[in-house]
Image (cartoon, rainbow, N blue to C red; front, top):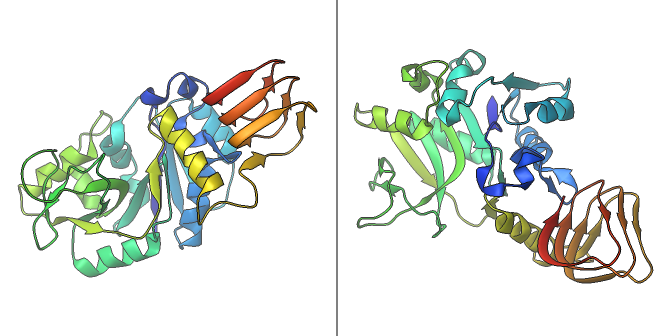
Length: 288
């Protein structure tokens, strides 16, 4: 089972932090999210795995380096979700491929998603769930997607950023240009292809679209079941804090961090390698 991680985007809503690192390399509990996604795919039996990159791509290349079953697709221009997948057609071959966004943290069973797609006879399956903030997609009773736009009557579902598709669908995308995968699906829907949705439940999911989303993810991991550990205060390797350091509610300190004197941090994520100056008092923010 082949898979692809979409990791080429600019992360515009995460500026200024995404000017320093591509969004899939944002640390989650001091570990780049991309590594978790790759490990998750491997645990469900997906290999080889292709990762595309464009924005700050050198950082992704440096992180992944030569790894067994991991391939990099470096894109010289922004291609969008559809354009990136179109470029990967030779890698995909002819069997269904699972494609996931590189900015989501979730507990969805990816192997079950792939199996359900293969049994369904669909040409593409988008994994959907109920998430009111993003509910836009409408389906027929037989599971076929009929509308991607918000508004109108009937139940709407949110796209998780996970999909399984027949790579042959991508042939209509012009090579080497920016293209949205949803436009590809719209094309095929008008021509009778089965572009379907499958609804998942009982899982955790979030995207890291904004700084607040990123902070909320850490709050969940540090303070809520089933993720939380013994302490809501996470520290990576080689962390040095002054004796009078105060921490409240929850906190994530990455590796190789020094926190100065008379500092107070509350609901803060501090990236690796940072020195927090003396007298710093911060709440609900990211220190990069």
